[in-house]
Image (cartoon, rainbow, N blue to C red):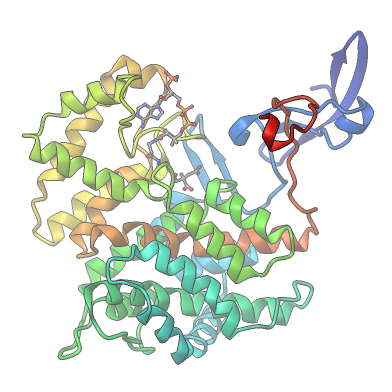
Length: 428
Ligand code: SDX
């Protein structure tokens, strides 16, 4: 393949180098485009065709439905690793040895307290507040209680900030839920595993213990692994661009939580269950909702379907679908919306509208069905996504800072008014 791309503008040719990644992805390096062409830039709303960075963290191939974290297949990691192992892999680049993993977990436990004054912030929220809004606010508030900004060139300072957010985030997530349901804020039990302790912090009643079934711990651990990173998605790009101004790690993650909340992104898992419930209430009439999804005059979209990058089955959806069957079976749950979901998937995969647009089930289509079977309420589905995505956000923020990437500042094409004279108010 040629090593350069030629662009011709007004009869003049410009040459730009081609960049090739380790998985043979090719990009045109246009770093000098504007200066070489005296001001010409590119236009790509939503960055569908634009690479924002070079990254060694996650590789995905949307056409073939491939997803790998640091070179390891998602299928292997979901089956053979646990969430903390995967978090370590994403952040530090290698699977941890047994000693490294024990130290990582112990260092996280040592930081799992949250300043008591944070509880006063939580007291100020109404019970009706959506946990994603609470979580974004509390994560940003962590800066106030941990003021030292992170010196990314100090391995020790960076490590301490990473274990701090890995430790406090599950606490804040559980507290956001407990506030909503009027339960006292609980710290769980540090003798438990990371995911097991999170479940205890969520569900332990003040007057009793809570010991989750292993099938629930395993299912949630797998779901968190499947959500842990996904290269330059909307919320990760948000974390990177906020961090590119050298804003701190915690506040960059707070911005990522806000981006993830949107129903076109992480908020889809809540929207999928609400859609499936609506179809169930409507007598299971999936054809009516398929018609709505295809109607250009109807803003309704089939939530959990389609993806910016996957034009094949989202490999995570395949794993989650298998897991949904076994978890509901293990728990003896017959959830009617699972059958509606499977019926909807079958219809969509045979419908020309969806087939032509390569719209397949994505990670959010089945995850809500499992979350619900684990006893996790629908308003906590997107916070679960955030809990899983946390190590990915950390890894991407750290890589961006260690590579000393420039501050993110896209250009635009101005389409507004050209110069005009000011009119005093009496003459308007
Ligand atoms: C996540 O990027 C990531 O990696 C995200 C994520 C991650 O791990 O971080 O994978 C997590 O966000 C998964 C996606 C969750 N969102 C949803 O399930 C919401 C429903 N899906 C869509 O809104 C949509 O598919 C997007 C937002 C996910 C992707 O939108 P694109 O790539 O911008 O696609 P598009 O809007 O350009 O649509 C292309 C065509 C359009 O029709 P035409 O104009 O060509 O006629 O497909 C149609 C769209 O109308 N279309 C849908 C549809 N998704 C796209 N039509 C009906 N239902 C849908 N869900």
